[in-house]
Image (tube, rainbow, N blue to C red; front, side, top):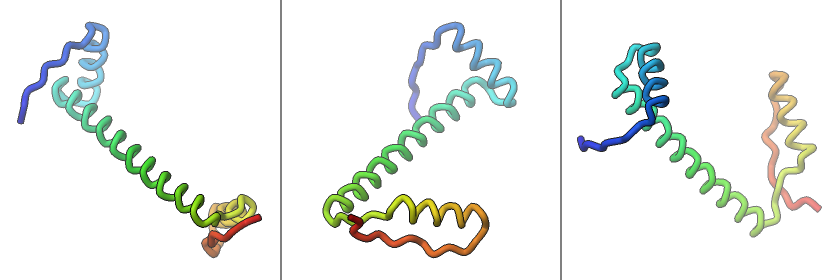
Length: 93
């Protein structure tokens, strides 16, 4: 484990102290959890953006998409608990 020093403005330190107390954690553990949570969010965001890039590239290469009407119909059916066939991408004109 390594050591990193952070300097918190007094107002933020007080907020951290209160939040840590409410959660039954030490301020140190609260800060570690917050940093880990933020790092995970950023990793998930990067994965999402990478996947979106791959999918968009595929759309540009193939021209295949799912029409909004078809996707909306599928989503409405799923929300209503109905069995619904997953839409298949095709070249829409």
